[in-house]
Every structure is written in C-alpha cells, then in structure tokens.
Image 1 (cartoon, helix red, strand yellow):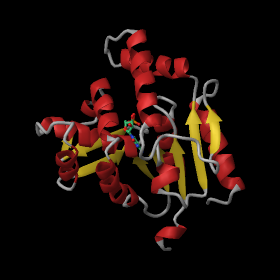
Image 2: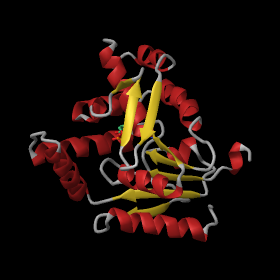
Image 3: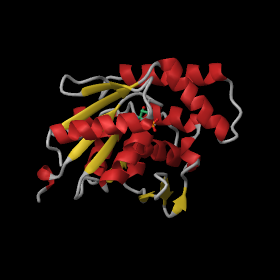
Image 4: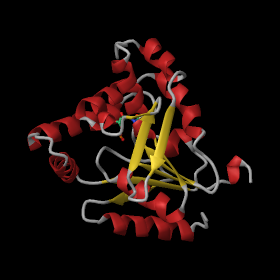
Length: 228
Ligand code: C5P
C-alpha cells in the first residue's frame, strides 16, 4: 500500500465546531491515526513563548519548528495527550491565549510551509482522520471525503464556555464569544490557506446534532464513497 492509497478523511471548520471530539471518536471507531493540526500550531506558539521568541518574528518562529520533538497519544477515553520533548503539555496549549497566539503565527507562510511536511508525515496505515482549517484544501487535497464542520457562532461560544467552566476556569460568556469572533475572522481573512468551504467538501452543521449523530453521518458518507 503506497501513501496515495491510504484512506484519509479531512475535517475542517471553525473553532469549537466539534472537530476535535468528532475526529477522536472517528479515529477510535475505525482504529485509524489522527492528526490534530491545530495542536501543532498551538505547540509552535507555546514553544515560541517558552523560548522567549517574539511571536512577531516570523523567521525565528519558523526556525524553531525543526527543533521540536512532538508526540501525540490517543487514550481509550478518546482524550489526546500531547508531549513536547517528553513533557505533557496537553492543558498548557489549550488556554485562550495560546489559541490566539496560534492563530497569529498561523498567518506566516513559512510556518505553514514548514508544518505541511510534518502534517503529511501523520499519513500512515490503516488510515488518517485529519482535523484543522486547511486539511482538505492544502495538506491532503487528494482526500476522498472532505468534511466542513460548522455550527452557529453563539452555539460554538456556548460549548467553549461550558468546556472552560467544567475545567474550573472562570470566564465571561461575552469574552468567549468575542475571542471566537476574532479567531473566526483571523482564520477566514488571512491571505494564505484561509478557512473556507471548498466545492468538493460536504458541509455539516452541528448546531442541533450530537457528537454521535455527526460521527454516524460521516461513517455513512465514508461507506457510500467506499473510503474503507
Ligand atoms: O483548532 P485549534 O483551535 O486548536 O487551532 C488553533 C489555531 O491554529 C486556529 O485558530 C488557526 O488559526 C490555526 N490553525 C490553522 N490551520 C490548521 C489548524 C489550525 O491555521 N490546519
């Protein structure tokens, strides 16, 4: 089996549309590999801060990437642990500030270029679920099933707000909504690899759907298209 015949399902969409949970569930059900590409942008932003590299300096941020030793581990509970140089940084990279910094460095063409190779390296047998903003359009354009997952902005902010509260993080709903709007705009309006629905993708609106309902929909589409 060469790399071109390994099946890939790409799941792109805005923040808090449910991509992460759905990708993890799909990967677990199919026993496939998973690429959380947003985590890679977050890790780069986190490492830049850790190494006191100014986020504004594109070339310094880009040079950092080849030095990073990154490892993902998917647990039976569908949770994903993320290690940088063998340190567990799973919760550190999930903060609002790290998300904002990730979105800032995601605008740099050289950073995106450098991450493409790393992302394609996740394509291994028996298959890959790739989640992000440009998985179908840029990183895996040959994917035979490209999903664009979205949900109403207020609903996405509500999900994010509840997630933060559950973790004991005290935030105002208005602040979460503002952050989400800002990140949506930044991701959609950047010049390189902006977040957009491609003509060959299937749009799923998860506003009124449960995680299991979205997973079932994607599995049905996969069967229809003979993905596996
Ligand atoms: O998905 P997540 O919120 O973890 O992604 C963090 C940020 O990384 C996004 O707001 C986006 O700017 C960037 N990103 C990207 N391309 C991807 C995945 C994430 O630009 N494929």
